[in-house]
Length: 290
Ligand SMILES: C[S@@+](CC[C@H](N)C(=O)[O-])C[C@H]1O[C@@H](n2cnc3c(N)ncnc32)[C@H](O)[C@@H]1O
Image 1 (cartoon, protein in one colour):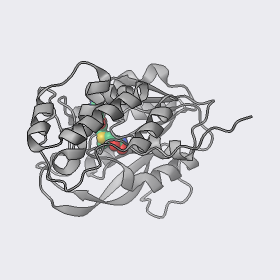
Image 2 (tube, rainbow, N blue to C red):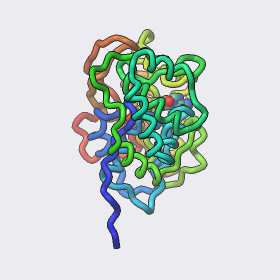
Image 3 (cartoon, rainbow, N blue to C red):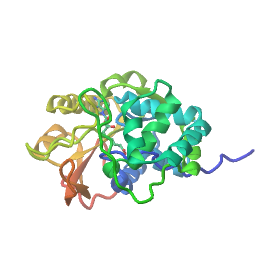
Image 4 (cartoon, rainbow, N blue to C red):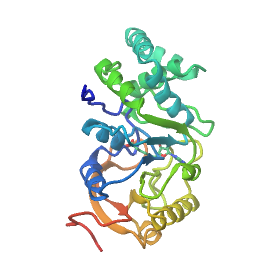
């Protein structure tokens, strides 16, 4: 029997709220969950956890359901999965033409075709200010040009690894409250919603034109509790506030420390405590408050 090829895919987009720093704790949570059925990630963004799992090897007897409300994002994933060679060819053209004027030209028009969409979003993501994905209220990418010295516009090897990995996944653009039909008892769900504001003035929520309100955080907490009651293994990350502690009162609250940029377009960084709320205990809980 030929063993599955070992792939090392990394997120191909840098995403606001990406979970690279939380990976050790998230992988620990996956291990602590024990054997589980299918995997669901309904706030996909850059997919840090999914790709970390893929680097360890995906199981052929398990389904991987990946979704996000952002249609442009899911189109990019589908474009890379379906025709990575064409995406690479288009990125090569973007690399050759790269300039401030070219960036704004490309930013102004969203193509219909998913392969062109994928190359466009990757190019804009690698060359924009801070590499942050942000949309205005019309759902348009609105980050200005970034002055990167030598941006890696086309990482061919990684794109090919991502493309092959995504063939094991089911991709869909939909809001988190429409995922329940696919979830069975014993499955694992990782919820990574836009952060609940840590103060009235902070704004971590501008990922998609829809935003994410306190009410939606409440709806999500109800869904998470309902799934946990039905025997689904649930992990959720968020900022640590009185609001989120209240919402996940019945969950295990595991505190984790991370460095984050604070504020929208400033360079201010700080150490922040975030929470991993889990429906099951983690093996070791040195930071746990419960
Ligand atoms: C914190 S980010 C996820 C980051 C991701 N885990 C990563 O590693 O890059 C939150 C994501 O939630 C998505 N989102 C916002 N509102 C949503 C909703 N109602 N349903 C599903 N996804 C939503 C945003 O488009 C964004 O990609």
